[in-house]
Amino acid sequence: MNEKRIHGLFVLSVGLKGFYALIEMASGVALYLVAHESIINFLGEFITDERLQDPQDWVASTALKLAQGFSLETQHFYAFYLFTHGLLKLAVVVGLLREKLWAYPACFVVFGAFIAYQLYRYSFTHDVGLVLLSILDAFVIVLAWHEYRLLKKHLPTH
Image (cartoon, rainbow, N blue to C red; front, side, top):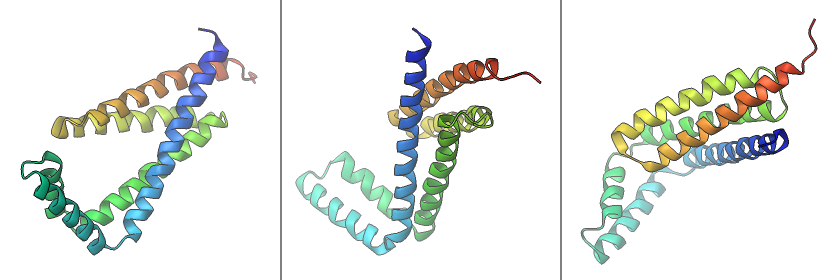
């Protein structure tokens, strides 16, 4: 594969990470701004409708467990987590797209930490989405490493 294609793949994958970071930030803000009672009421209506149709519905049962443990503190934690996670990821993405040298090591550390945390969470939840996110993060790290080596090779030596 030639360097131009690899770079294009790098830009595309980093751009996807940036788009996902914006979604996380928006979700964090929305979660903070929506009243706790509104979320509980929505979950209650969803659960009731689904359980009336099928009392054994896995989605409704899972939503019921979520609603029972969804405190105001939990809501604020997830709002903060989503926003700061997205903001950190977006800062790295912007640095990578602007070819800032600091962004490459930051990418390795930040996305490596995300992979570790996602795989740790997977051990409890078995959510395949966490594995897919980890694969995308690893892919971005590999491409960023390649770009970093090329960028350093073309820097003027002092």
